[in-house]
Image 1 (tube, rainbow, N blue to C red):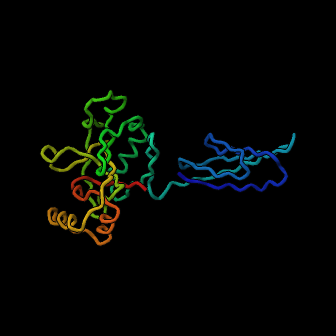
Image 2 (cartoon, one colour):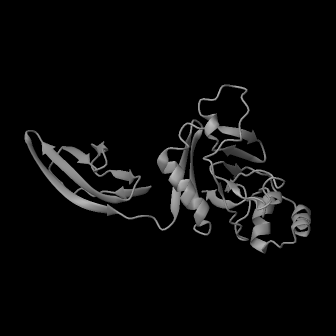
Image 3 (cartoon, one colour):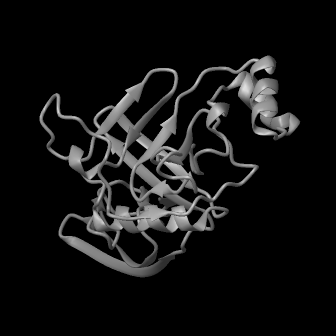
Length: 229
């Protein structure tokens, strides 16, 4: 999403009609408009006073963002999410599914307060109440992309997967994902996690876990590939 503020140099008109080139319009004097896709757009402004009017048009280019952003729309509000370039397989797969409409109408079928919310199961679309969910997918898995700097802070977007007994390579579900809720983590808990997993958190990572929270027990077990911003 790219928001552009438009300038209006008309000084004598009393009515204005903007067309932004993407199907949206405005009658404001100098509106701002948010474009949802990159590309070229023809923007026109018709200024009128009484029976007199004039129209001017110009072309603008909305560049592709350096970082990939997606928006998850829910009935409780929307979440803007940054997808990490350090996990390109998961990033590109998520974009592909979103553009195909794969996620449209799916539920967050698993919600655990203080831990995470999980969605992406195609079986959840129009599912009846009480039906067991959580095993659906697009028919493929993704190789794990563990990155030491990407951990399960509150707001992390990560890929769900089946258990180690049937999935020793810790491959990710092709579509199911979760967003970490989590709770503040004590220094003792972080030390215990480091000892169990033979890993070390950077000082800034420890500070975020202790102040913001998250679920460090999931680190190096599930691929983190984005974050809610």
